[in-house]
Length: 305
Image (cartoon, rainbow, N blue to C red; front, side, top):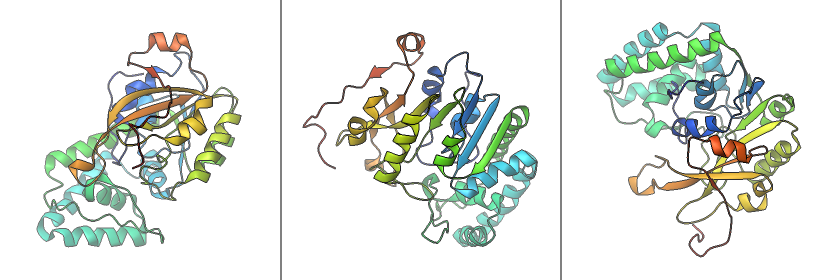
């Protein structure tokens, strides 16, 4: 596993890039099974872990289509560079009208390149869809968005992901998390990064208590190893599902700052949690990141939001 953490070409709020070293540190050094992600999102964790075998799934078909297009060779660094250079020049010339033209084109044709464009030119790196499945993020109001250096950066990210996919055995599937978990074997590790319950929903199909409980039941029944990312608490409230559900397993925590929200005052640090069914003292000792075992007690410090 490489020590360097790289950023994938698709952006999203809550991306785990800065938490990759922490997640890596609890992956057993002798792991040689399949790395399974039922919520692959941007793919930041899987591409940095870079296991020999991976099954990456999501219910968002546009994420799966984008990375499947890289796997098939339809999307390459050169293709991305030429596309973003061309559309970026039109964006600079026409302004936000061109962004909304591409957004409409994506919503009707679902081109993976158009998905990349609206993802990188949309407001605050958000991925959000309306009830009809249409991408509805507004323009970031930066007509100069695709300057040459930025285009080169994205092309390099595509090249990095392409090399990992082609040198490993990666499979991409658009399906529900329950189906992906059912495909796992005892030798595998399931890493779940679902939408953070009661915080924000930047997810294709939404997320509520019924989904959280179903995920808890599926992972608790799994005979192999799992890692779950979630939130523990912030300055205003605590994640009640840690106590009511996830505390059955091992919970480790650390502080993390998310750049989530349109206004700076809405961007606050949160205590991030990793929930596992296998972490032991030996794993804790070799951990490169400071780990704190969560003790969940009611406190007046965390009132209702």
